[in-house]
Length: 488
Image (cartoon, rainbow, N blue to C red; front, side):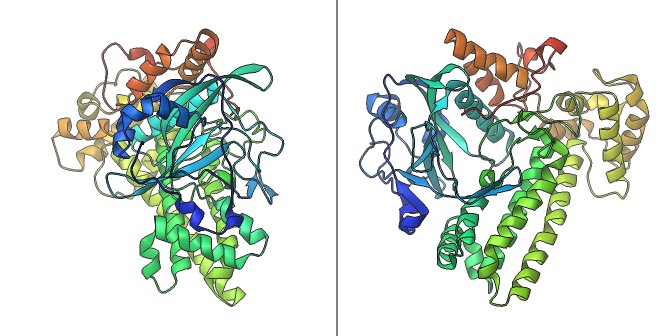
């Protein structure tokens, strides 16, 4: 067995929350990747997972005793339009384990076949999106950003049919919780207050136990989710990550990044950047992510209204107060992050202007976001007076202002400050053109070497690795990949 105490905690909720579903077996599963460090963290037997029984479980061909696969139901606003019933159309929640730190972690299969919520879909996933999710989620974890994790990826030996036939695959995903804003919306839309209360109590016990001690536990739940999402989106913005499809069914109340569909990292800094092919109007553009997060949280607050207070007016007032804190949480996290990225200590009234001036300059000069901040993260850049390598001469006026701000801090230990900056300004991000090249190698040539190398490089994104300079280079004009697709 992979773990001695796998159980299905979600099954303690009423049957209206899920449909018990067995995965659909596949023809010829093969293991692509097994996340050994994560397996150890979860207390799983990596040797068992890599063996025939483990492969059978990861492919959905054989479910060990103790696992009780469920497809969970939820609703959601998709690009602003409400769908009263969605649900796990291609995913199954296998169960949960207690990790080495005493936290419960859920394990799910994505691409394991149709469920009651597949809406005529095949419930399968293609190899490319599985590799993207594995790589992107593990990259986010290495960057220190809350995220679901990838435990394993397997090919199925079968084809899935999208625009063209593609090799099929399954990813095993790990999360603190798969509960989404849309899960609450499902019960709210049905005016099922009893279901809402059961879900909220479950979420509090699992994710925010401190809220149970509050005089108003459901208000405390809302406040905690608002704070978690504000901090999460601030971290996205600081590294140039664009989720791509911030529907309410893709926002986990745990504050983890979830559902890596048409996501990507910016190369050239441009606040209007959109990667999702279906986001024609830029609803989920980079610069809109804080606004959309608050919009989604407002839908969450609306769903919780029956629990917040007996009187409608009071419930609305409590919800508004909780939502008003979003900007405070976001700006606190974002500006603290920007100060760390620029080696600044303390709060100066001119800092916000200093940040904005740099970003405006980066946009005007079409500068690479990751490489710009990394170029500033060196002792020579802090000391001056020269121009850091890779930055245009037009950056000099801003550099003078920044160095003056640094000098105000009264510390001459530039080496220590540069070292601290290098721990928050990555060398390596999963650049979209490299991700796409990796996917094409796997799909067309069955070559997983680029995937494995990229995964290895991204595992230590803040450490310069000799010979891996190609992973820091922005795409040439013919390498640019302007769009990504959901595709799973």
